[in-house]
Image 1 (tube, helix red, strand yellow):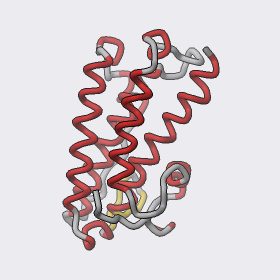
Image 2 (cartoon, one colour):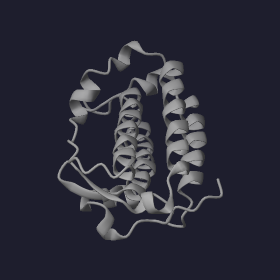
Image 3 (tube, helix red, strand yellow):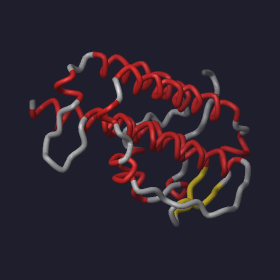
Length: 177
């Protein structure tokens, strides 16, 4: 994990992504952060009881299991966007409706082992994908959901999005139980 992927300039990602960028290290260690987040998330999730994993801190909020599947879905979508932009696909990519994805994910029927197997597979694919991008590819810009963003910014979004949600689980879910 020696490859350096520089942190993007502020003009390489939409304003809403700032909340995710605030969670990441800006030292070029994106691949290491992906790896470290994988280990930390696995350890954290393993420490949670079934009660916590199925807990909702409000009736209209997702369970912890649903949040974890949302992290996986978001990573998969953002990695696809990175692939498309790296390959210089100029197609404007659509957004996605995260609440519909969560509502139809049938998370309640899945075991944590199944969810974590998917999480690890998606993360390892993301690491391999970003490790394979050239310096030129990482700088390419595309449009998704009417927002311009670079390939490297999408990588940092993935890392920060996960950390953002783990922070929320710790702050709102665990504090409420």
